[in-house]
Length: 441
Image (cartoon, rainbow, N blue to C red; front, side, top):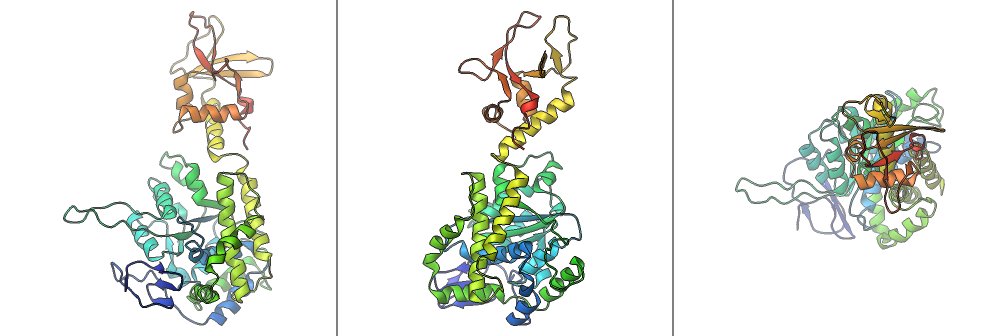
């Protein structure tokens, strides 16, 4: 059988560009001669001793290798899209080392890890070769801010662009499932803002930002090394000497166990350790739970020197850290409230006119302001509110404002309230209390 895709081909065969794992007569027949940078060197024991031995007590390192091993679990778990994590902190703290170490499960740490400045088409091709595996990307700051959001969607959702061939006939659309591990000194939101774009909640959920600032750089337990830099150097050396064994061995033991059909139930058991609100939080919690499952399975196989339950506890801790930094409520709410607060901060004195008789008219008016005992209220016009929350539907904006009690006055069945103005007009306006715009932190 000619296998045109890597990854799972039934429950007993897993194909990479360089080997077949399990049983079944199939030959990988790729569109190109590229091997996706899969490769092997050294030994599995060398990898365990030089890298895996440093896992206990280091949650960020556990997240990295767990993400690398979670890719092969997606299909058996009936999860048809991927996603992943972005390790965020200042330069030279060890976050890139964590990505290299994750990559060493499947290939040479430095070669298997790509840069974010690769083209969208190039990343599609690599993602297809890494199907049911890991896509490791370093330096988000090098990405093209115009397209990076689309790349996150594409990579996580596992669907390439529809393209036409030389005869104008539609080419076969590339499809894949990968776990993504990224690192950088900026967030996706900051990078997209360089091109005047706003992140969507779907992008934030697909690429979850995790703080990589720990006790010693990216580490909590130095395992006898004098500094975080020393531990990072040891990991870098090991990831280029012993690599390419852990991922295939993990898959091999999964197949031999005969327990692939039990994985969904196992995930549900671990998922109970990650209490989360429905929606975006629940999706992120599931991502951490999948990583925890991969780690617990690998520890049970003897691939990783982790005590039972440690990996789950570490992932719960990282999830709680993410939730604490992100705040409660939908991501869109926070973006909308912050946008309105920033708009009032920038234009409150120049584009809002007092409702008092004889007040000086302002140019490009976005609304009016009225003094109350507790401070100013800003009375937005419909167009002013739409401009302040540019990129969001007005109904979504009003829902976010109403959810935190930021609409100070409204008429029955409406979110606006009429105001008699000095010129005799009586328009319906959105009465916004700026003190409530921090209602979602």
